[in-house]
Image (cartoon, rainbow over all chains, first blue to last red; front, top):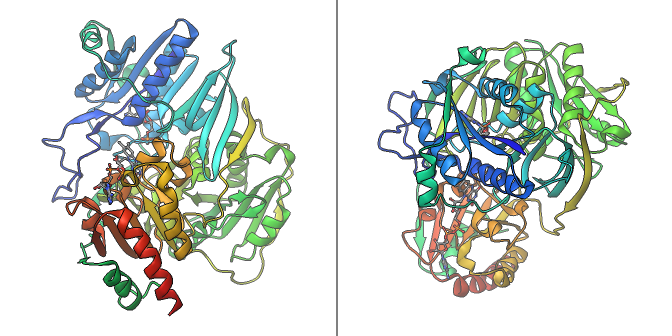
Length: 254
Length: 322
Ligand SMILES: Cc1cc2nc3c(=O)[nH]c(=O)nc-3n(C[C@H](O)[C@H](O)[C@H](O)COP(=O)(O)OP(=O)(O)OC[C@H]3O[C@@H](n4cnc5c(N)ncnc54)[C@H](O)[C@@H]3O)c2cc1C
Ligand SMILES: Nc1ncnc2c1ncn2[C@@H]1O[C@H](COP(=O)(O)O)[C@@H](O)[C@H]1O
């Protein structure tokens, strides 16, 4: 089974990012970058599906700076077979639609049976690329997946989705786009031999031009600013004081 | 500007209240830019939903009522939305950023060659919107250059619209049902709960790993009972399987802003705080005085939850009775 996984290079998700004083973005100097944790889950799922299918290929693809090669290497160290980098130097100069159209061009080259993506980027938080890609390809989509079972004939998959109010299960014809939610699996760590092997794996580089994709965003951030800060309030000494304050000061206990 | 279309979410045969926040957004956007506001209900046997929706100050409510639309598949629904948009001079398409809206709207945007802005919290003008990102650490002003614009709305940032004006005309969409593009519904396993739904609850009690194990959930449930509160949780305990995914509050779970939020035995990681920091009054109970949750709390109580929470339940019952 041939599976394409889209991965994004994002700032360390445990760090509280600070705004640049000029409002052009957040400060990333000195911040480590990692693979979007949702995409790590997507890579893990692809590896498991390939193992279950008894063969195939897992390709990790990213649209990003040359530095994003590190994130592709992480996917390769987990066990993916090869990587694709579409070089882009300015994240503010593209939007989810450009990413989706670029991934579509990669899909056209590779013809995978399945595209696995993360549900959402933790930095831009758009939650758009998977659904847009599915529409551009004319394929089914199954977003927010917590379980994926591919049919024995590889013609369809049953996907359980984290919806509001419960879990929805859909059957989708393959090829399809599936986006991973947090509960899909627990990703493996990259092993030392995995890291060594990854160094020899192939990464192909493309540009938007070489893929024939117009780098024409419809959505641009025109300024960043700080949200209203919450101030730390009072530390109360006892349950009694807390209830008293909630009742008489905050007036939230009816 | 052209017209605005608000897509209704149908839940258990009724209009989901979350939809009404997108109506308020639409009114704010149209107040600046002009144009009519239309509603759209897609589903099967949704006449009553349309009848309800038409009370909220809309110019028209389109209804695509067909057995093929019984389940909210993004593939079929996106096709219906696109048809209504093209035939009625719609340039702004919106829905609330629930799981339904998040699944559907980007597909709609791609179909219409439109730019989309997710989870907006404010309107600047007809093409510029404000949205939180980086786990709530920044807000961005985002401009859309395409003629048709698609916007999902952060429910906590707008009040629910109230019934207003004359009931809108209902217009039936009678075209043949759209192709499901190889997608079929299999089943829905509902999370049954007698407690208020988190995005609608006035009070929420949330807990984290500090509770030690699922066997201790009754401790926080008693606090919920005393307060009539909804029960929420951190990713850590949802991942551990103590409660269903539907309980997760945070950047990648539900975004809530109740009047009163209790954070019990949870550390206050940025991803959790991103989903609750707009609550009116936040109370934290944690045994670690350095826990980040205290930085965003109005009232903090440093202590062992196993001792403090049962005492609190007693005290609240007493305070409410007096
Ligand atoms: C991509 C991504 C998305 C995420 N999305 C979300 C999200 O949407 N929502 C979310 O919540 N998290 C999310 N997280 C996870 C988040 O980073 C934290 O890991 C998680 O919120 C921590 O959960 P916790 O507070 O329950 O556990 P911990 O951080 O382990 O905190 C437990 C707390 O309990 C306290 N405690 C222990 N015993 C007691 C006691 N007896 N009495 C009182 N206090 C006690 C401790 O002092 C500690 O502060 C996400 C992470 C990533 C990487
Ligand atoms: N620059 C990118 N390169 C590769 N994949 C991406 C990129 N941006 C987003 N994606 C994919 O789309 C998913 C959802 O991202 P987003 O729509 O940005 O929230 C991510 O988890 C990735 O799988």
